[in-house]
Image (cartoon, rainbow, N blue to C red; front, top):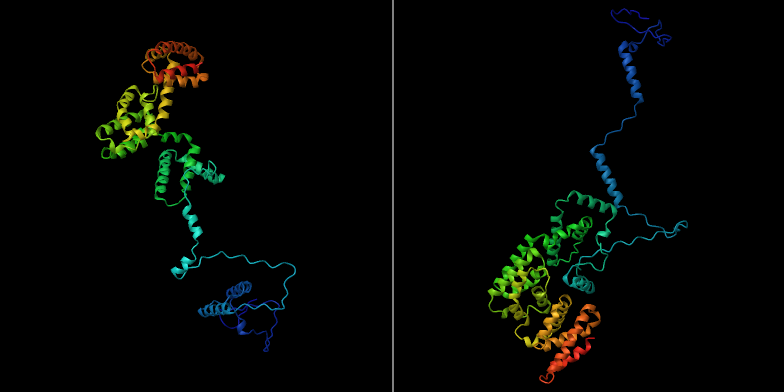
Length: 422
């Protein structure tokens, strides 16, 4: 109920059931209890909200930070409490042994101390290590076999996405390995090996793309570049030819330039003495086979071109003192000549008739061939043995006719060898 207290425009809120505790009586109110309606409700709501909030934490000041730093410093300076002598060890669990700390290499103060502590045995072992180019003491797929399945899958996926540049990348890996090996840095180069093995395991045909016959332009360029040295030094030219041109003499796209270079080299240097000692039996007889053996990789025109160089090649091979070097050529000469003559007799029957005509003029050569046929009689084709029996019988008749007029060791050798051919 609202009432007017004599003041115009002012109202009072009368709360139901509230007793007047004022000493004046008459139901008067304390002036402090008079509040506007809206203000009272707002104050009541704020008081409820404040009562439900937790107490606020006092903000830290700069002095609190200094106090914490001081406490931390004092804590670090306090030594840990010493263990009492009477403290009994725990019987439940044995004490753990301290883990050995890794050995740290102490820095020597002087050079003298460094030399005194040098491990000579370890130094020798490190210096003796050599990078084996073929890794023959490991598995065939080492070091790529060390990679896990997950890593191999990543590498294989990468190879599949880069198929266009893989040939160039393979060349880069091989070239870089060769270059780093020349530097003798001692690095194992396993990274390049892993790449090479991964590529060729996934694409084996890429290896044959790098062979000389599949890259004639690059090979011819290398042959031309290295061959320039031979025009000014015969010995270096022969080394270049024997090193990189003789091995590819059977390659059709490279053989023509190889023989043309050799011809120009030998005709340019009239004096062959500077080339003595470079060519030996191992180099000379492959050249002889290319020049004279039928049905080899060279065309007939290239064979004729190589045969014209044979006298100069023979002079280079025999050297300045043939009397001291020819004995090293004799076994290869015999095996090649006798083998070739036997092949002629086996393949072409007319060769037997030619041999009969030449027999009396070439008794020493005939005795060597008869001796060779006698030693290999059991492995000769049956048809050749039948034909040879007739030829050898004619030789015996000729030997009897020549016995009274010709007395020489070669005729006796022919008779002896003819008896073994049966």
